[in-house]
Image 1 (cartoon, rainbow over the protein chains, first blue to last red):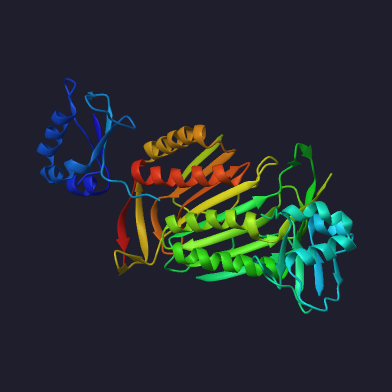
Image 2 (spheres, rainbow over the protein chains, first blue to last red; image 1 turned 135 degrees about the vertical axis):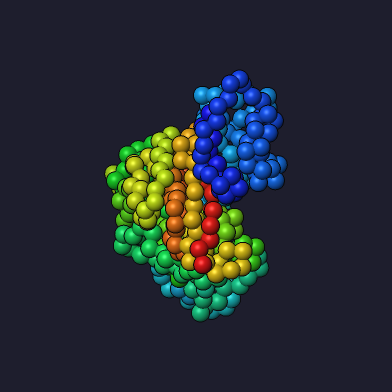
Length: 79
Length: 79
Length: 126
Length: 126
């Protein structure tokens, strides 16, 4: 799985992107545990950071697979 | 009094402006009678044509004097 | 609020407003002459204006709206005479700190202009 | 509805849209970098984008809005990287037959963009 970190998530993770091996599909909670285990500074961002899977915001119950591109989307501020 | 005719009012009157002698102040109804007497083709426009006196729309009961510039304002269509 | 209002018989150039440091939003409306009027093809429209009152009434409308939607500046240019298809008949540019007040002032101004500002489309040229 | 969306690191030029014959309204919003951020003077903002998703989400928002507010075309250019004070960070130009649908589409699009399009102001440069 390719994981992309943007804005405050990038700062907290200390990297812009990384690759993770995901042997079997994960739900959102399990994925967050994996990510905050790797980067504890992400934990405070979880409450207001959305996940995108392959370029789209995920919906409740969606699963994440090894082939996915997952992005951490803190509150946006474009425009 | 200087009278300015715009748009359909100009077409109906056949002139863009003219001067009238107004010996004593007139109300709106009396002024319209004077104008439609001069230019009968104005009569059908009266219902939806507003009068401006010295560059401002008039309000009910306002009087028109010899020194005034009066304009006939058919429905506007700028922009 | 800075207000500038101009009536012109010349082509209105595209966006020439340079926003000052406190401005975060520039909203512009351009009304363009369309290629048909009431279903018939045309080449141009002729506009007529009661110029002094058109300018003073636009100013008054803008001053009134500024109380509710405070903006930094408004520039209005309205063309009169013959305006060919595809050219701008009116350009209104509103600079404000944030976009909300700019959109509100601009769209309300256009509504008011279409009701009360003495400018007319007097002729469609074939 | 024609939709064009561009992310760029270059200066966004002023109004370059040439309206086609059926267009009577051109409405443009430009978001400009202001000279202060949270009360402190700045010289520039740095923007970051998740580019593919930013483009696809803008397109989806516009396609959805077009059903309610049918317009002729929308052009969006959003800058990323460093954008100096006074320069345009985003320009959105909407061409439509009449101004009502143009204003509605543009202001709703900006609201949606500010909620859902993955672009961020990541740094204020002193």
